Image (cartoon, rainbow, N blue to C red; front, side, top):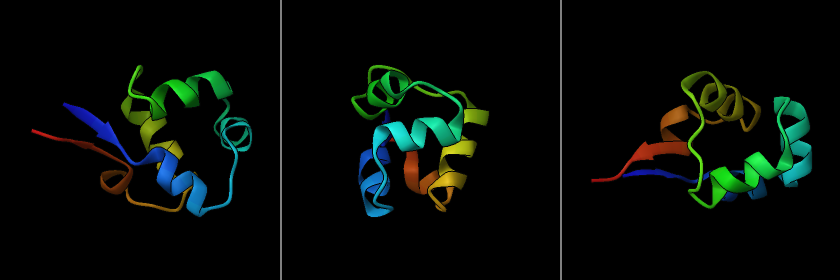
Length: 65
């Protein structure tokens, strides 16, 4: 199962969903859906989001068995 720590790391950076979405070039609705596990980002978007949050992709997005 695909999981993420997006909300945790976003809040650690003191960012809102809107701020992160603007930096990533996506909608805040999409960020919300990723955080709630409704949507999964593609590899390039996951890398971009992780980079914005200054984290390794493996820390933000991971597969839980």
